Every structure is written in C-alpha cells, then in structure tokens.
Image 1 (spheres, protein in one colour):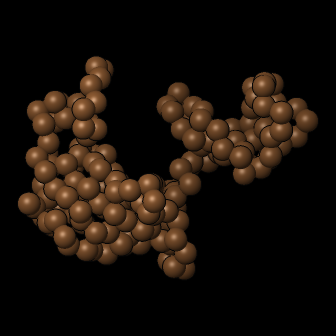
Image 2 (cartoon, rainbow, N blue to C red; image 1 turned 180 degrees about the vertical axis):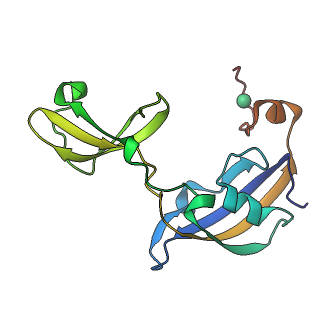
Length: 162
Ligand code: ZN
C-alpha cells in the first residue's frame, strides 16, 4: 500500500547530523507509527515519504526549516531556583517536562545554575540542524474514521476520549 494522506505508517528510522553522528533511532523502541498528512512528524520527512510503499528504504536530508526550525532565543528563560522545589540537585544538561513562554508543553534543558536561579532552554534538541534520515517503511494501512477525526494513531485496543 502506498503512503498518502490518511494512512497509518510504521517506519524504522535512524537520524544523523551532517557529521554522520546518530542523533536518534527507532531501534529498540520499535517502529514509529504515525498518521500521514496530519503533521504528526516533521514536514520534510512527511514529504519524503509521500507515495512510497511498504518495504521501501529511503534516505532524506531535511534542512532545519522543514525540520524543527531554527534556535529561538525567546525559548531561553531564567527561572527562580524555587521553581524546582523537590528536586535535590540541578545540573546543566538535565531535562524536565515543562512549559515554554507561550504555555505550550515542552522538554526544557537546564543550561546554567546559580544559587538563586536556573537558566532553561525549551528549544527542541534538534533545532538548527540539517537532519539525515535513513528510513525503512514497515507497514502502511488505512486509518480508522476515529483516527482521522482525532488526527493521530490509536494503539490497538486502546480507547480514549478527548
Ligand atoms: Zn485519539
């Protein structure tokens, strides 16, 4: 089956930077399963997969503007150390589930710590990087009407309301 809008697609992937270092891979997590044509994955990768079919392997180079965008200085914030109550030790490089300046959910990384304050960066770790994807398409199926309505994939047997 060919990939087009409204198909549920399973892919194995490895993503590297232009120095050939692996940044992320589906690997032991198992395939990434997403709803095609609904902005569930970055636009550059979605475009590269359009019209491909089960069993194909493709390579796609995705510039930042079709990936996670450019580094946004507004997403760097300094918050009081007291915002991390209950956390014994805070060090640069640690990651927390938090919120960006517009209230959106984001993973924030600690970049600097003083006695009074913590500087955090809510940019996606892959911003500003040209990404090289190696992708193998494992499965393509029609989405259910409910999946189309929700705009995302449902795990087999899972029921939810939102
Ligand atoms: Zn849903």
